[in-house]
Image (cartoon, helix red, strand yellow):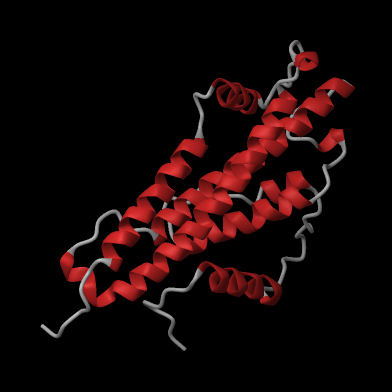
Length: 212
């Protein structure tokens, strides 16, 4: 059975990916992922960006968000104090949510369209359906952005001011940028949602397609 050229909805692609995971034989020395850190290591930045790649990353990030933290001995950086351990957990949750935002933005842009031309009229309904998928994806991104802000605020609490968690300084920098507004994915998401509204209006205003 050939699937070449067929485009799947995000929900269908995710279901197929989960099915492949259950059917694929595991290597003899494979370790079962249980903790956040293990699921996070399965996250990949692909050179070739496709909906399937983003859906795969979203799947692993969702599992990471829902999983427990590993023992501090197996954290992604060295943890020596209770305060470091607490700040590490807040920063990690913020980082996971930021990555979820980014993956949803990438995915949503693949279902959106930047311009509406008159010759797109024959595929008006398909484009409107694609815009609906993109909108749902961007609104999901907005949810994760709110979560990222919440965890960043916890990590930036006054009692952690002089608590340094070495090895994940990039996460701490992101928390600072979120607090100052330098990093504001919320603005990006709202801009994309407004763009979808404009594109939807343009497609709805197109006359019914006629044979050429």
